[in-house]
Amino acid sequence: MGMQGLLHLVYPPQCLCCDARVTTDYGLCGTCWRETPFIVGTVCDLCGTPLPGGQDQEAPHCDECLHQARPWSHGRAALLYRDRARDLILQFKHADRVDLARPLGAWLYRAAMPILDPRMIIAPVPLHWSRLLRRKYNQAALLSQQVARLAGLDHTPDLLHRLHRTPSQEGRDRAARFANLLDAMVVPPRRADLVAGRSVLLVDDVMTSGATFAAAAEACIAAGASRISVLALSRVAKDA
Image 1: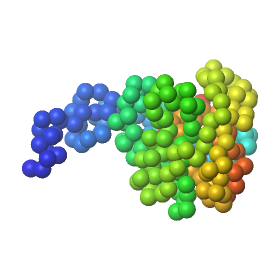
Image 2: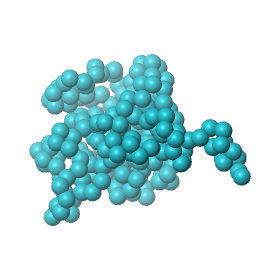
Image 3: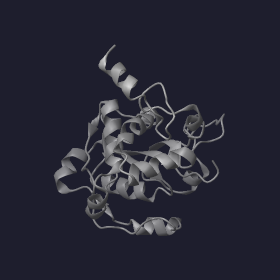
């Protein structure tokens, strides 16, 4: 028996969400798996929202993306922001559960596979330094690091800089969300040569209106990026 097997005898693997025993590390028990809304099947090619099956379009878009211009080319999400997914993300962000980066990053990588580009740079949506100091880590950077590792692509955690601390987006309508993030991010001069002419995959934990991704994408485009794609761990979808 190897070291891993001995460790499992002493410390049996537990479900990521509850205390139930599971057969492998970083797994979910049957109950929590059923209560975790993974996004599968046909999805919007711009934001990853699940769509009814049998779409005729090669790259279908949801109603929201049909009516809202997006400064990126492709988008995917791994989970819907509800039920067990919401619980896991809140623990990851606010309860120092950095151990969740590995399994959440693996789920995110699987969602990202259709939009990955061999020359792509992977970068997280940045936190303002004051929020980073309080939280101690950028959850988006932990996720993007895992995706880059699994994909074998370049990871640049400091590709973007947040210029000022914006108020929380919670409770704001769509227009206010976009206005709140106007000119909030920039590619610093030391990274300009790295992004110029390259494809960039931006990673964040939650996508609601897309305002945060839009601000980050526009900063990359201003620095000369050739194409932007976005990847969210979870998508807030009204009708899903």
